[in-house]
Image 1 (tube, helix red, strand yellow):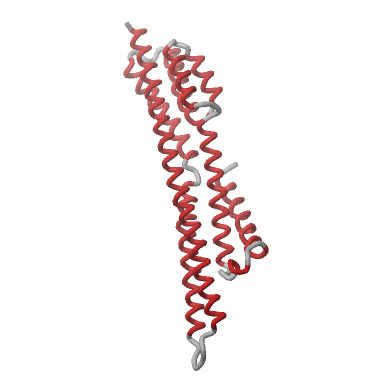
Image 2 (cartoon, helix red, strand yellow; image 1 turned 180 degrees about the vertical axis):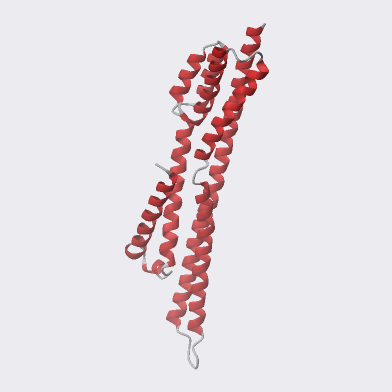
Length: 246
């Protein structure tokens, strides 16, 4: 599914669910927060949807089996000259790391078959370019919807602040009754509206910030592992070229 289509579906579903929860499921004291509470609920639902989507996508990018076992098997196959076996391990593992390493191995097979490479340095440069291109295709998929998480964190905080201001305006308006006592009911409703929106905005903001930082760190660590694994494979392949040339 395309990112734009997925985001549109999440937006529509979250809007409908947020309104339904606000109208039919929330207790009265939370409904007193006003219609902005429905928007905050929609933002929180979107946040949860993007969090689960990122967890699923990153888990899929890591592949089917243990990453450490996969790298060990590929390294052993390359060291023994079993490039087809290493490719088979990539097919079995799948995921972003396997795709990147597979690209390097296929480039090695192509260069060896064509006889274009005369030394290990040329081999390194050619395979490195192929791996960098493959990595550039994989990274955007890993980082997809991270902008949405950070946007929800910002918008949630701003919506909560807007609700707080509206509630305080209502509270002060209830106090500004000329020639009489303040309207206690309207005053309490205004304060309740302000506090409910503040809590909702903080919940969306904090959740968005924590989720964004968590996934950025996880993706950075994963891409670092890809770089390290690719470098080790390149060195093993180049050492085979050096050995053959002697």
